[in-house]
Figure (cartoon, rainbow, N blue to C red):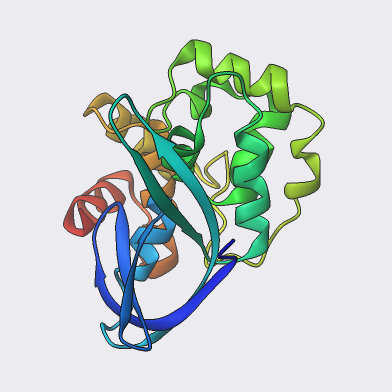
Amino acid sequence: MISRVRGLLRSVTEENCEVDVGGVCYSVMLPPAVAERLADRALGSEVELFTYWYLQIDQVKALPTLLGFENHHQRDFFNLLTQVPKFGPRAALKAMALPVATLAEAIEMGDIRVLKSLPGVGPQKAKDMIAALAGKAAAFVQVRDEAEVIPLQPSSEAESDAVDVLEQLGMPRADALRRVAVCRRDHPEAESTDDIVRLVFRQV
């Protein structure tokens, strides 16, 4: 079992990265939120990922697959997500598009609107997540050691309106919440809805 990988970051895409460990490159699949943060790292910098290994089996082959996380909280929460019926490792990884604390809070609050906007999660799967994990996710609500924590509710009317505008333009609510929060963090001077939306699209 490979539980951690530490080495030099060689490449990053929206779905995975390559980590050079003593001349051997490991291809590691990543949650969307982790991939986005690693994309900001310089290639060649040292990274350490907490990993989960599993054997992906289809009709013709078995493929060893390594999944990577920034810390053990993320990996533990990923393991929790796999308890949702018919929610395998690939689906659980893809759904982790928001920080753990935000996802846990959405589950505990029964916020179907946020959950169904996650990649690969529709209305029924959002209900399944709440039914299977309500109470179990509570321990993760206080996890605050990630690079950013996205609030479920925008902190101002302008932010709320910006999220609504982005949703109307076709952006999933999870992405809209995350992008607005990052925009306000990086550009605190942006106070109007128009300014926030404009800066969000400049980031895309």
